[in-house]
Structure formats: C-alpha cells, structure tokens
Image (cartoon, rainbow, N blue to C red; front, side):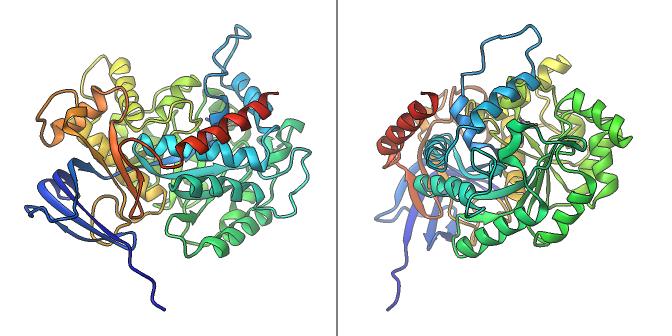
Amino acid sequence: MSLATRSCSVFARQALLPEGWRRNVRLEMTDGVFSQIRPDALMQPGDHCADITLPAMPSLHSHAFQRAMAGLTETRQDAADSFWTWREQMYALALRITPETMRAIAAQLYVEMLKAGFTQVAEFHYLHRAEDGTAYHHPAEMAQSVIAGACDAGIGITMLPTLYRHAGFDRPLAPEQRRFESTPEFIASIMSDLDATYRKNDRISVGVGLHSLRAVNREDMIEMLSLAPADVPVHIHIAEQQREVSDCVKALGRRPVAWLLDEVAVDQRWCLVHATHLEVREVRRLAVSGGVAGLCPVTEANLGDGLFPLQEFISAGGSFGIGTDSNVLPSANEELRLLEYGQRLMRQKRCCGLPDGEKGSVGRFLYDAALQGGARACQQGAAGLAVGQRADLCTIDDCALSLPDLEGDAILDSLVFARPAFPVRDVLCAGDWVIRDGHHRHEDAISAAFRSAMRDLRS
Ligand code: NGQ
Ligand code: ZN
C-alpha cells in the first residue's frame, strides 16, 4: 500500500525568498517540504493565492507554562519588586501545573503563536517532576505534555529538556524549585525517550538546555554535554540580570559569558539566551563564536533585565534570534519592534538595527537576521522559503498593511513598526494550513480547554 502524497501550492504576488523579494512566485509543497519555488511564474488552477508571502519566524525561547500568568504579575507588592520577586510568583505557578493543564496551556499558547507568525518554538523545559518533587513514572511525562500541546496546535517544536540542579552557584535547590531537580543522566534519559518516540516526526526535534550558570556547575555541564548527542542544539540562560553577573564574578571569578566562552567550546550549536550584560570583549568573542544570542525583548522589558548591545554585536558579525520567553505577549513584530526601540531610546538615535556603516531597511535586516538565528538555534537548517526546507510560511493581505501597494522591504517596515500585531491571514506549517483566514480549526476547543484548565489552576 502506498501512502498518498500531500501537496499544495501557493501563488504570491510578492514573496521574500532567500535571494530577496520576488514577484509572482509559485511555491509547491510536497509531503511537508518545498518541492519547487519559481518567481515570475503564472498562477495555476488550485493555487492558494496571496498578496504577500513571508517565511515564518521561530521563537527560539519559550516557557509555555508561564503563559498561565500573563498579566497576573503587574501589581506592585513591594517597592523592591524585581526579576527576583517575579520569580517567586513564577515558582508558585510552577508548583501547580499538572500534565493535563500543561497540555492545555501549551496548546492555547501555540495557537496564539501561530497566529502571531511563529511556526517553530524552542521550549526550554525544566518542569520535570511531580508537584511533591518525586519523579513521574515516565520522566518525560511533562515534556510529552508540552509536545502534545504542540501537536494539538500543529506548531513545530524543538524540545529542550533542561538541566537544573542548584538554586545559585552551588547552593542547594529551594523547596519551591523541587519540580526542576535533575541530573545529567535524568535529562539524557528524557532526551533519548523523546528522540525514540518522535524521530520520524518532521515537526518535533530534541536538544538540550542548561538552565543557567547559577543552576548548573561546570562538572554537570561537561557531563551533560558529553551525554547529549553531539549535533543537538544547546541553550543556556546567561547574563540576564546585573546581580547574576556580580554573583558569577564572586563565585567563578569571571563574568558569565566570558566564563562560558573560556570553559566550553561555544559554537553554532549554542544559543545564549538573553546575554544582556556584556562587556565589549564579550560582545566580540560571542559574535565570532557562532553562538546565537537568544533575545527576548518583550520579556526582558517586562522583567527589567536591561538592553542588549545589538549594534555592537551585529557589527561584529554576531547572530541573534528572538524568543517569546515568558509568553506575556507572544508576537513576532512586537519582539522586533521593542528590540529596535530599546536601542533607539538608549542611544537617542534612529534606525539602530543594522551593522555599522550599512544602509537599508531596519525591518528587513531584523526580520532576516532573526529568521536565520532562530532557524539555527532550533536546528532547522537554512531558514526561509527554499526547496528542501520544511514548508512553513505565512501570508499577508495587502489591505492588512499600514498603507496600500507597499513593495519589498517597505512591507517589513510596515509590519514591524506600523502594525499592532502581525496581521497574518494564513499560516502553513510542514505543509499543513494551520491558520486559515486568521483562524485555527480547533481554536474554540483549545480555548475552552485552556479556560477550564486556568479555572482549575486558580481555584
Ligand atoms: C525561567 N526566566 O527559568 O523561567 C527564568 C527565570 C531564573 C527568565 N530568565 C528563572 N526570563 O532565571 O532563575
Ligand atoms: Zn527563559
């Protein structure tokens, strides 16, 4: 018995291909990958027609469960409210998530992400254990719940089971962190379990997370890296808060990024999430290492982290991608806009998001760069609309832009700077239309399950 091939085709008046904007582009998809892409083509019967077609963005950093506290941590409880007090609220939430609520929250978030222009998410997952801190019968239970939510929505996921062992530079875990407790062997067993289950699924891949230099010491890091397959992505939170930097200098004698670059071979597999607080030398060293800076401007603003030295980093050839992190507001254009506006406010200049000496569209540079860096961090190979790549894209109507008849890079500038949200009409992920006319076919059921899970959680 032969399996039927799945195929579809899109005809776009304008499409952003790896070589640049092209007109009248016909894209054919077979079994979830692009099989043919032709500019200056004729429309054919059965083509799905679009004014504008863009490659979809990856979110290279997400904690799905934190979607369940979006908007709930904006009340001042103490004059000294900070990242560290927010974290206590996050721990309280983490203690209440069950495998069932995890799936419902993840599915809701991922539908929202698809509508916001993302088709791939890297989940930095460390909620491994049951509420009382004991291991689940299947250690991958919670990771499987997140993946089940991704399957409900139809988004691609890079699952990163994350090693978390200390409360801070060799201090033992606090009771409220008991669900995160893990050893390198424990994480490796989750990874191999997931790999065996999902190896053939083109939307699911597995990498590894190291929570932070606070939560993972050198010895455990080296052991984790030796147990993980040699080619998988490695993500780590780093240098997000000033206090983390000073604690690191006290404990390890060096700043976090400098320490990491000295102690392990950071290369293209690595994603350094946040990397907010860098000295000039760390900026240059990280840029040439090939590691991706995982920038999460919305969450970094929400948590009061600081501003990443974007212009210095991209001028030194550094790669970056964007992550929705705490998922307080999952939005591809909001992340890029805030990234750029943070730089403008800091420097009191305009059009900062381009390497020194270059001219051109900021929207285009940021979109392209985040696409490349995100694809690398999620191990998706080359980014963009190209033959052989997984068939992911989003379509946008001309009338959804801020002005009529925009062409080329002006489209991206309109999307990034002049639209409140990413106005996607249809989204294709691995050859399936997951969003059509702005809707997901299961959105009502997914939203009802989410609302009921949230009521359970808060009762
Ligand atoms: C997290 N989130 O693991 O969810 C962290 C907070 C920590 C961000 N850093 C916890 N944005 O870093 O210790
Ligand atoms: Zn994070």
